[in-house]
Image (cartoon, rainbow, N blue to C red; front, side, top):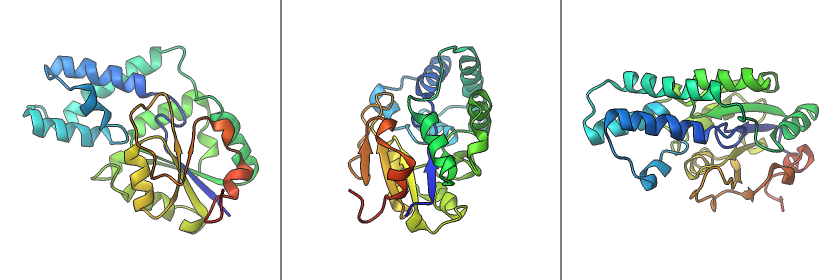
Length: 222
């Protein structure tokens, strides 16, 4: 029986991907670099620090990775605060409430920065549902490296076999499976071109999930 659900955030709980895209491409314009859409897609699920280390190495950017991250974050924060239609993805709040009522432990493991995670928790009032908020900025390598999910599982009150991850990116699903965890892939219209075929289950809307269904997830799950 599943007793802990580990959620990704961007593209799973809230659709901040358009805000991130806006911030990245405004910054790319400022840096005068051309990043094709195909390359940008590979950044999904990776931490901002990891992305800028890659870009710095590829394009020979002069600023430090820390300065690059802060510049992009300024674009993001302004857009996040000013976007009136930003909301939780459809069905997410009901699922969080259902899991909480069934005393399922909820852990957030996101590649987002701590500042962005805190912004989301405050804006939508969902912080009390989670026992742990884990940011990818605390790990040297991003998803698909499994470190963030291995750490999340270590914070669970249950063994690995009673944990499941919900992810929307190919990198995230790969990381969850490499950590030895069950994984539900969320095939979101907001995270295009993501191969989720290696997830244990793929859903297209959160109405497909309930606490009862998730708690029954495991080797015999159908």
